[in-house]
Image (cartoon, rainbow, N blue to C red; front, side, top):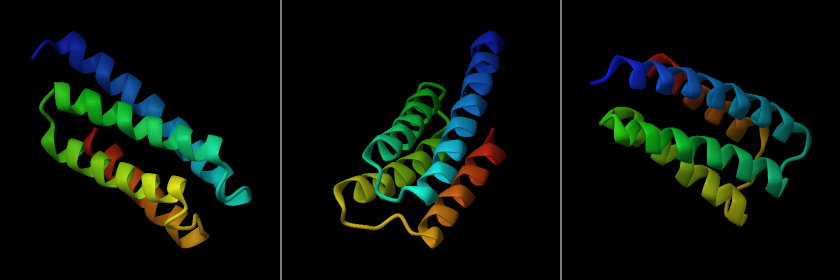
Length: 99
């Protein structure tokens, strides 16, 4: 694996995770906000794609599960309450640890 590609992925991934965490905290004040939910979903979708390119299957799997959860929040099948937001934040911590 090219070290430059890996370093770029790590930098971008940390930035995306930071943005997702900021949006999750914003979501606490505006549960169900479609723009915020979409921004968080896109962050995990992008992370999943980069991890897939690098064949980091564990990260792909975690991001995919978080995407599924966020998709259910976006569709209204689940509600973004404080417990759900805390769970997603813990998921971001797991992904951060993988980085």
